[in-house]
Length: 279
Image (cartoon, rainbow, N blue to C red):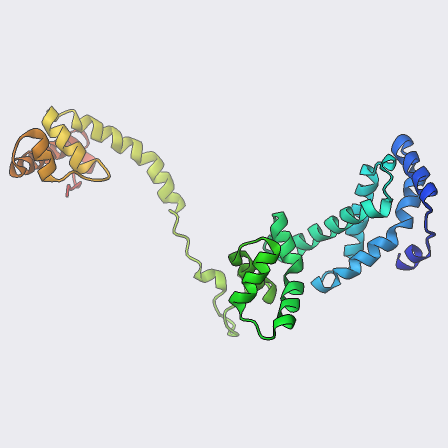
């Protein structure tokens, strides 16, 4: 492929324009083939600039060819711009997207600023280090942040990602045959499936039991229970006493009596929760 691309003839401006018009207006496949073949050397040249990312050169060339075809599909020959100038952006974008998808198992560089950081961090770091001798990381990160318009935190995170390879969660933590893997130490704090299902079934039922039991209380008892026990920020005895015009000790007595009434009502209506205790 490389040899054939380098042997392909260059296109003069008039010939390139004529072929572009044939492709745009008549979908002439032969014209498309001549345009793309003549510009494959551009694809190969650009692929060589990305070879340090550790991906196969052939794959980069293939992705660049996809970008070249995309450029041909969008090119407007009447704008008096050489096709190579227009295609360069599409070829580079296609290769960069491929690198971002395959360089790491962790997806990164989704915004334009992060993409610029990914592809320019090492170059800027080397250049800044050479100009000022030994530069501390905080200063280096600040300079790169200013140069690329990203936060220093993003620079630090990207630098960390570029400094080491991905590590599989299935990799053992030691050389022992029965060694645990990294994923064995990951803790999932979310509820278990049976707890989720239990909550879906039991919570509506318990809410119905409580609603029926609350119907056995008078207005003042219900108000005290609601504010003391059923709200996220339980009211104090003093505040309820001030609202009702009674002492806090009287509020405590009413609350205890209401809780006993609730317990009796729940047990009578639902014998299977006889062991339920109220704090």
